[in-house]
Image 1 (cartoon, rainbow, N blue to C red):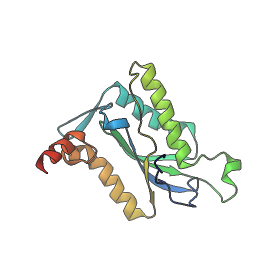
Image 2 (image 1 turned 45 degrees about the vertical axis):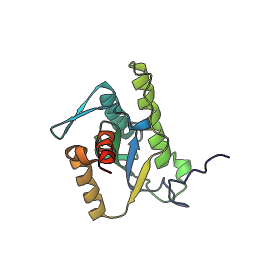
Image 3 (image 1 turned 180 degrees about the vertical axis):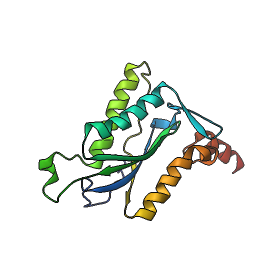
Image 4 (image 1 turned 60 degrees about the vertical axis):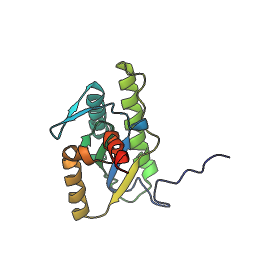
Length: 170
């Protein structure tokens, strides 16, 4: 019997409508493909630079995409992405991609370029975490979280070294 996957997206929500979204995208197995944290600052390796460039590519490729705060971490990526959907007409006719399609484009293009650069083992985790940003105070809190994330790496739940040391305490 196949394991039933929990749906990640809010049911009946149109993720191509205008607004801001916070996304977290992890590497498969939480492997640190993108670099290291040194003194609270991310030092990107070639893979990390590619991931960052492909995030910026989204804003250039799709005129309705607005990129806000982001950070590439050793084994995951946090970013705020805005969709400027214009008027309320049928967005599919306007060619506006949903949040899942935009994240998919980011994951696909960054994976391809990372593999071309020589890292054949790189993989993103399936799916991603999202949060619909509903107001300015939430947007500002998330921006602060993203900016401070590298400084918090030693206690970050995505840090497998931290999780390993935590399990030794239990």
